[in-house]
Image (cartoon, rainbow, N blue to C red; front, side, top):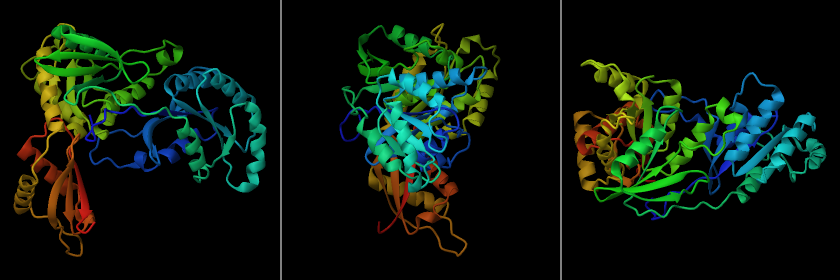
Length: 446
């Protein structure tokens, strides 16, 4: 439940589809804009994205670049078909991109036929139309039968407004869920075969107090509600697949979108690792989405029963996690075995703790006392000209995650290292276990 009292919303999905070399990725990057080029404050979050959140006017949505989905050892036509099928399965609206310079090709017609069968809304983008003298090239694309062609230039950003207006007009209306505000929504994310399904079953099987299975607000997920010790929870299942097509067997990247959808609706995200196999790059990528979404996070090491252990095993594994997931230094780590149920009873108490931190509010006068003490112990930095950062006042503006605004003389003077110092002081003073903290600097008179 957000602070306005609404349920958590599910963002619509826009997929960019088309044959190779029509400029899909350029268009994707242009639409995503600054959001994908944000420099993460902490190392370890990978940046090779084919999925991202994006915004257009009042609309927030997910966007997929199918050109980034590599399916090797297959003829080109088969690859295009797989990518189009994936977009059809996952998208609410499809942006079909063609190359205006090349004119219409047989491959464009092939993709159009696949998309026709989807019955999904389609927006046709004729890319590489860099000036009005090229508009006459649009007419031949009417024969694709997918609606009016929109002239765009991904390279120069021309025509994107009209294209996104048309796409947004077909987005389904966002609907919130109906859970009580005190219900803790949690999702399990991680790469395939780390044991997410087994863990869901272990969480539910252990409690034996399932209230109901309710169809989730996403098309294919099932939300499972249960109660434990008088507290209500919802497990948002990301493990199930609606289709068993070859595209799902050939590429793991489809799972990222399902994780993103689940993260959006969660209060607490369980990042599940395979204790037997250890950590791979995909684990960091998926965890990075939860961190950037500002969700409370618990790192869960599954299959711990299968790990050969001595008295240093857990310490060494934790050191490796902290090294690989530098950006999740605030997240607690729980070691379990979903298969044998060992240590599973330790999980929900940690989920409760991080949920409380995620929703914690700090009284303004107490917050300012902590900031004053922090500045006394470690004075604020100065710039090259000798001007010193002055923090006049601090206030908490929201929760989920806890977000603080510092009113200062010059926001540029709040360097990354000092922001991190203040974050650490806030954690020492108030706990904030398992939740990111956002610190925003604003000029005093803003």
